[in-house]
Image 1 (cartoon, rainbow, N blue to C red):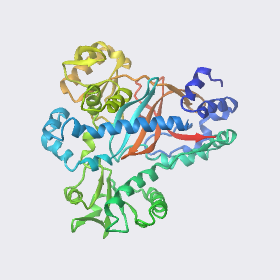
Image 2 (cartoon, rainbow, N blue to C red):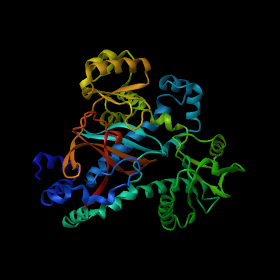
Image 3 (spheres, rainbow, N blue to C red):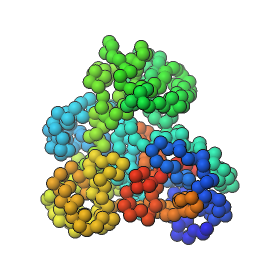
Length: 464
């Protein structure tokens, strides 16, 4: 097994360790055998874990953090800067009823929006990291990396590589970052009235057909370490409670679980919150993450808004620079004249004629559903899709972002070039960490998701 200098050079963009791992594979043929990574089998409930982790250095981590936080900060500005929090204007652009727009904006003041939980999906291109979408929700894939990271470090092939190269893993536990973020805000809000901060995770069908007792125990261990360390003098006790909405009660304008006061609610319902619980939040007696604003903030139409306003005085010079750096050209699929670079083009004609460099996406699609990459789509099919999306309007057209390709393990024995989608987590103003989804470049669809056979790879930040 030999890798070209060009391939090693590409991996070095992530870290010297990433390039060294390829050299390690050249000397250790067993590293390309899936059987050497049995510890990973069945550990992902949804997809499949990639045998090889992704090694990055501090410089790459800092690039990821800056990209993730910069774009998320731009998203948070959209309701107020572009729509002045007006439900009628929001309704018109997002193609939703006014009452839905009003509900989504309800309670979404600066303090609430500033603290949302999210994961941005990026592509690492020759022009740097480019954002393809932002999933502003507490229910996003990839949080499991906190469980997976120790497993990778314990695999003989990986531990041998780390030892030979005297590499130390610097990752901070993603779930610890999340809990610290929740606790930071809760302590500011509730510590004068309570020495105890309890966090409830509302999960659909929990206790009915879903059991996450192992995750519950693990999360509470992390939470206790935080409470008895950094926050010992401020609150000192509390619990993370896994439950479903029927397990929660409201009384005296507060929220309770079996008589225990809940201070923080993390809803795993993609924004759905029962009215009586929302009123507790409106009274100031509960913090909710993320609530009804979820769907509005997760729409891919937000990328179109940022892209079309990249030269607008709505944004500061620094914000406009961030848009140009991280947001690929994106537009809502409405017929008419738009800017493309320095040119004025008729959008529908432009999309018909330039399929090789464009991608069509539904504004609220998940798991890659409905995405059509022009260069991978037959001409006749592209024409039908374009006709459809310009009638429906609730789609975006985006410039295709060419990804660097990186080598990962493939099949029972072997390896191959893959394209990578980088999931970057941000909790409020805190960067949580990252994960990677990898898809063989030979895949004819090119959409990086588990349905197409993409695998999850843990990202390990290492230093000598």
